Image: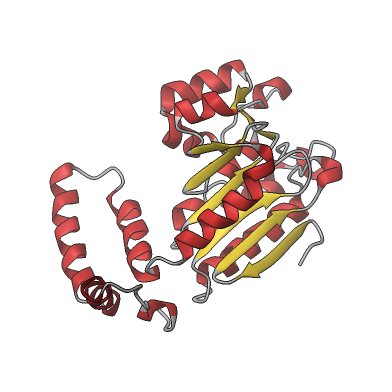
Amino acid sequence: MSERLIVRRGGRVARITLNRPEARNALDSELCAALLLALGDANTDTSVGSILLDAVGSAFCAGMDLKEPAVLDSISLAPLHVGLFSFGRGLNKPMVSAVQGPALGGGTGLALNAHIVLAAGSARFGLTETRIGLWPFAIFPVVAAAVGRRKAAEMAITGRIIDAAEAAALGMADEVVPDANLAARAMELAAQLARGSSEAVAAGLGFLRDTEGLPLEQIHRLAAERRLEAQRTADFREGVEAFRQKREPVWPSHHHII
């Protein structure tokens, strides 16, 4: 694993930490490749219940590393960027990103791939690519999914920086916490998510992917089918039994391959 990335396990939480503080965690090709590998491993590891993405230093991620020679070679970098800024769609584990300081350009795209975004008071977001003569092609879809196409276009056109409060108001950040509390709150939330039924969450995230863009009638039909499937699972039976017995459930999916 690259030294640019720290991967740790705490219980059922896979914590993936950007570790290039001297470069404000800018995304060079080595870090992009290491991130994709770590995220893929966590997503397929049945002992992992949730993923936490955070960063060392005063910045979450300053975006693309403009000092890397390969930055001008779009052919070699394109597959990495496509994978890195779309991996959230393929996750079957809940993911939290904890953002402090700048998360600009690709940093914004990286953070918004998570299902839940925690922003420290110091967090700053922005689609700043037009400042270097580029449109944020790779990250635009994930930003538009969070704030809508019109607002995402406004952000990209202006390149303006958004603070944590505005990010929360726009739906980019789900919770704003003091900087001093960010790490503890992120771990608390990731641990909470990891306690849920892996089978139910994976089914739900798959449902979101499969129904995107479908007519409402088809969504309702698929929802009914998936609900019947879910009600036949061991996790559902355990959840009902635990509720009746007023105890915490012991999910079968946490002990067997889904």
